[in-house]
Amino acid sequence: MRCTTGSSREVWTITESAKCASALAGRRVCIIRNTSVEYDKRTREIARLLAGNGAEVTVLAVDVEGRRPDLGEGVELRQAGPGEPSRHPWRPLRIARNLLRSRRQHRLLVAEARGTGADVFHCMNVDTLLQGFLAARGRPVVYDSREHFATTGSYRRRRRWWWLLKERLLVPRCAAVLTVSQPIAEDLARRYSIPTPTVIYNGCEACVASAEPVHRPMRFLHLGKLFFDRHVDEMVLAMIALRGRAILTVQGWGDAERSLRELVAEQDFDDTVRLAGPCPPQEVVACASAHDVGLMNIKPETRNLEWSAGNKLFEYMAAGLAVLVPGFPVMREIVEKADCGLLFEPLGVTELVERMTWLVEHPDEVERMKRNALAAAAEYSWEAQSPKLVSVYEKALGRDSHGRENG
Image (cartoon, rainbow, N blue to C red; front, top):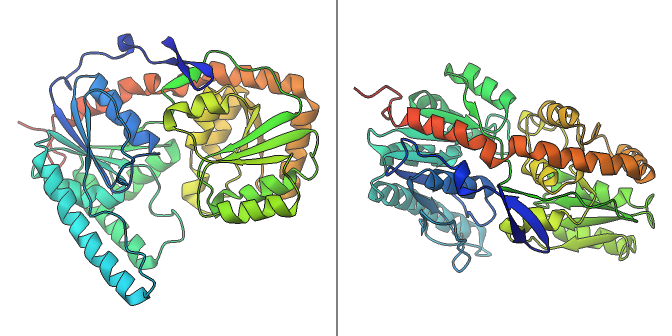
């Protein structure tokens, strides 16, 4: 690794020597993503990693015009969609327009993917799996199951039925399957009678050079999307007991932002809780490093959440932060192995207050956890994931779109 500057902190990034020559040299890869890649870390990092190993990578995504991130040398980003969805106030017309948009988007994605002439097609999530197979026409398909779609979210029964039908019909034909945690990998293997998928953690490309000393007041951070299922409101309410002894920064965007701002105003938390917009993806680790403890407060509402290994956990560790996260299986294993934070049962504000208060009262322990987190971050970095991903692709390139070995 080498040291470069990001935001106001120095960060360590993967060097060229960490990238190796492989069977990917000169091969063309098409990554298909059905939404924007602006804040999609996994798509960006996989694309750069493949390009760093000699592949010519094209990312097809539905992007917001004027907000097209630079994915790096060897990666081309193409718009592959009919623009923003309709927001017409009359519901029947809005539904009709969005249905036509969805069908047009399907055709555009397939046509654009075919036009890349790729040797292998990487489908990000189940909603691009069918397009990938239609575009591949006999060439290998890699399925990246970033969620456990059998249990994720509160989606309508018809949509979930369609997702699972696509998985059942197409996953056994994939040249390779990737996912984000071992429990999800094992369930996919059992559910579809396939070899256990390869786990590629959503680690970071960079980490800070050193963890900062513990601040007074102690600085807590919630980083990421502000959705209601992240229960950020409980983090804000926990700060009532810590006013004057700690500061909470909530950095991100999402549907819950308005209600969070109202809650902060209601509690007169101007000096205790800071709401900040998202920072550029390449600066996330450096921005996070100015804090002491990274928070997550998801609840075991679905298997998908319970089996998760969230991006934020790895970003906090790379930033040199202690962590306070739910004691779900994957996160428990990582945190206990690294001894980099506390686990809790996500049952409400009382549990959060108890753990956050302990951390505030034990700054020496927090400082030790911060150092441990940074020391363990390299194990989950993209540099560490690189050999697994390259190996998957080398095997996939020897298979067709039925999962059979060529020749």
